[in-house]
Image 1 (cartoon, rainbow, N blue to C red):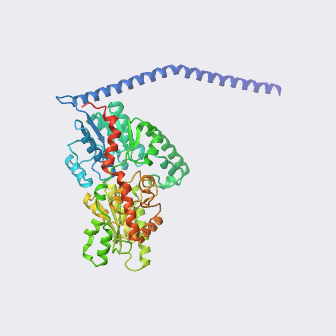
Image 2: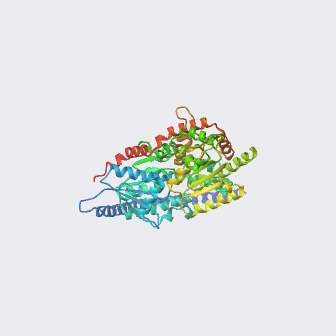
Image 3: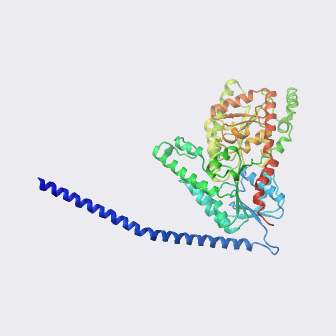
Length: 537
């Protein structure tokens, strides 16, 4: 028995000795590979540095070749692949260009756009029709051919990462087409910033409407809450939700590094400021520049004549019709035959037009219970731009929802309408409706308030923090966060006495004067002055 035990001990000793020898051999092998790996890393880093310097020198040469016989004329270029759209981001672009052109007559300006099938003249005419903005001088349009790289539809999975990488390739196409002196990303493609700064040797700035990733998105995924960017099958699975949280965290890190490359950062609201400061960590270079809203053309219309309109209606002046209503405001709580509820916003999923339609259907049901004629006294007008086929398909789906809920006869869709028609609809509306959760700002909300509608906006984001706030202690509008709350708020607004509604409209108008085109241009020029001072015409 003792010999057996000795044999086992000897075997274990040999096994342990063999294992220790293997570990020593492995350590020696790794140690012998360390120095070659260091050398290889240094060589690769050197080659990468030489490549970057070579590309940078080549791009600098392209910039120098752009100068005419009188020398180099500095150029400022805006990256806005959807510049022919009709949203608030496009209004910021054209107002910014107008302000810079007026301030810096010796500087050339360009826009990188992915729009195809249109000319520069047609794009400028579209800006005039939609926003009533005319630039003082011509600008250069650089037409990009690979905008599909930043389309969400191109990436069924890992959409944020796919669009961001696609923006780098689209940015490379832009940079090689025209090398500017100052580059401004006005659509939120942060991953193009290091490209233009380090390869193009440009001064770079960004105007951020909405952070690509935010802590709110993370909370949606962590809470396994199905929303626009969180599919049901992911929210229902704890493992997939955990993987998506990790993906978002890593993406947020990359997004912060890219955004931190900007020499100058402008954000459009308090809500956006909080997220960008948390992600980009550049407080000394970041400031709020509220977007321009065309409030002046609305503010010039008098509200004080509403009482006169009421008297005329009481005297039987039925023939006044829509022209007087659109020019002079709304009637009182029960004296109007028809109240229009107007929504202004692009037909994107996050605008949540479905909530508007559901809330309107609830309101119609309540009005029908009050008596005959209640349903016919209301109409919902959905005004917005369609950027692509996805948006047009979304409108078809919304029309189907209206038919399903039995409200199609009281809902009207108006797509890509000219500015004059938008203005007419707003000034003749009783309620301005907005339903987007965490809207970064809300230009449509401001325009509704300036037009004299009673605004009913979502209780979050820009409307909550910046816009629908008390003016000198007085209420300027209503906020809601569910279809039931929206229906109740609309019912409350319609029941308000004319005098109370008129007072609220006046307060709302006074409060939105700080969002005018003139205020934006002043703040934008002040923010960009350090960057523009680098230019030498």
